[in-house]
Image 1 (cartoon, rainbow, N blue to C red):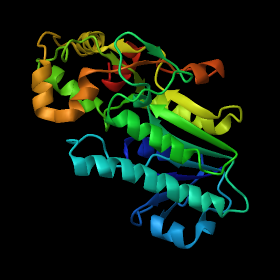
Image 2 (cartoon, rainbow, N blue to C red):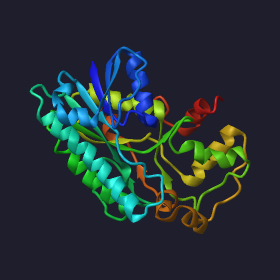
Image 3 (cartoon, helix red, strand yellow):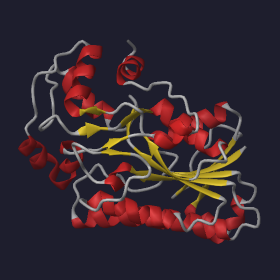
Amino acid sequence: MKIAIAGGSGFIGQHLINDWLNQQHEVVLISRSKQPTTSPLLSSLTWNDLQKNPLLLDGIDAVVNLAGESINQRWTAEAKRRILQSRLDTTGQIADAVSKLSRKPGVVVNASGMSIYGLSETATFDENSPHVHDHFLSDVVEEWERAADQIPADRVVKVRVGIVLGMDGGAFPKMFMPYRLFVGGKVGSGRQWLSWIHVDDMVRMINFCIENPEIDGAVNGTAPNPLTNDQFGRVVGRVAGRPHWMPVPAFMMKLLFGELSVLLLEGQKVLPQKVLDHGFQFRYPTLEPALKQLLGK
């Protein structure tokens, strides 16, 4: 299979590329500048290259788009503009390139976010749940998905990515740091839901979406057993052999992170119903074995 990926230098993207190369797939990395390639199966092109010659994607079987400005920063007005525009620009460029191909890829997997469901301590969300506009990222994700729907491929899968757990990127190393220092504890009320997924299952789920012709539209990229922040921290402490005792008050998170703190103090309980219905088997459906693998336990 020949797969193009945008955003391949990020945490999930690197894991995907390594997996594809191990499977002997051809991989084309799309980025702002030419990237060094360490495998004869891996090639690199820039967005400018693609704009000048969309036929560089001719013969591609699948496109995965993970590109976008990091949300892990203070949400100033300028940062908000970059976060939204980076997603719309890259998705729009992929739609434009695909539209000019005589042989279009069979599937485009476009990243999205579970923020589209809004924030709640009581509701449970699956792919059929309505969109809720209650904070900045929920609006971003809806516009992002609207742009993805313009990609003229046979299938467009929008993976609403949860909190992806790995030791080499993503949020978990920062989440784990207080436990390393023996000062772990709940954040805010501790009742907010964390819809998480092990990075290995995230890679496997994206591959499952590529390979399964029946999967289309929204897919929740989460494990089937979300936990509250307090429950999550207790499992981390138990697996790591560290105490879970020092709460972090909400006002401190707001002081440190500004508007971004909404993602740490509130959450949503999101279930991956679509892939479960299609027979996807999670390697890490519950948190404890996921953490044991990550922490070498």
